[in-house]
Length: 260
Length: 320
Image (tube, each protein chain N blue to C red):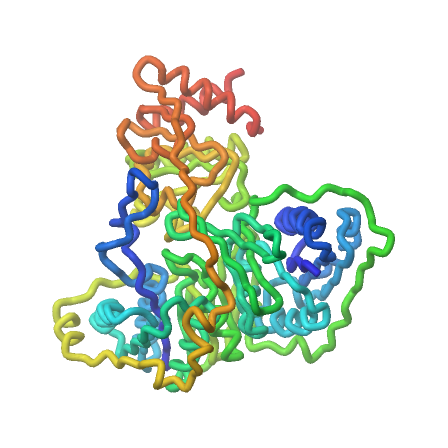
């Protein structure tokens, strides 16, 4: 089974700091990592390959240093990695990103595309379903478990608000996955060494037969017109020491309204 | 027309109807609702009581659950027929799956998870959403494409009121030809979650963190949640420690929630957690460390052991 995993580089939210003055996230200078949902997608792809054979290709679009997360994917066991990177892509919204990714995917033979349910920075969750629809593939979102795998079909569990669905999916298809779909492995030293010697394919705008007005800020239907801070710092009524009981009374009074 | 896309006549759709009617007064646009789903949509006529102009219904037993390729094929066809200026849908698993697929097919813009919608004086449709971390907001427009699409975070707007039926209001039940139901996916089974309240729909969330110390203490959290008809939330730390499943995780790598009351018990308040809950109406933090960052976003802070405080809250709620 030839599997494509779509991965995004995001700021490491575990290490993010908040600027105490503005209340905004300090984004400069901290580590970039692979979006955790995509890491779970990659792990699922590696497990599927171990079950039925085949190959895993990881594709990412982003600035040049995105190569680091692709090398990490190779260290974990991916067979190939492609970075699509060009300054002209800066500012691309989800529709444009999906179009670019589609062009990259089309250069390869594949049976299955996997992506995380969303990225931890933009949190739109749109690129997966957009790529699927553009490529006329059946899409299953919010996949929480792989239940069965055959050469040309899968059985997966999908977790939604009101319950759990079980779907049979005929390939090719695109799945977006939640974190419960797998437990990502850690890279081994030999994996890391091997990955250092492997090539990360880099594609540019000119490789993809797109027009300049189709990509970047120009090609994106959505335009950001304003960015503003909202201070969410609240002034807590603090209860400590002897006043704890008083605090509990206040909480109880609030909860009484909901009490059954 | 401002068209609302939904798969049931629930609260999220009514919230969007309320907002759309407000927006229609500003823009002069009509308000339509397009519902796609199972047979229960056959009584969608009551939506007309909320003052919408048109309701379109695609209901069929084969549409009980979200079949992505079939839903997309039908929706694309119906939307081309209605030709709306704007499409809104709840940012739940339905809207967040189908809306991007439609946007890709229609090659138009879609803004995810909006928390405000408005028109400016020039008539631009302004879509505002929280950017990374939640304390930066971005306002987005879609100037040159149609329809302009947005998913809206549930619980953002008030539910529509029954303002009465417009004289020319109408409902249209769409006939769907059999060939629209071809699919490459097949539903094998559906298991309903009965006893659990979804954290994104709950009025009260009792969320737990490592400060609860032991997995067994989650029972206390569940007990309080049940007592107030709420849901159980969790920090990433206790999900990673397998105290509770991923569905309960609040934060950037979990879910974003906006309940009436959020109780953070034994959660220190990492940025990644705060980003997922800071817009809750009332935040109550319980933590032994008075300098824990969670107190910065709280309305009420109790500096005490999380377990014994929750137990005391339960005891006082029960006595009376």
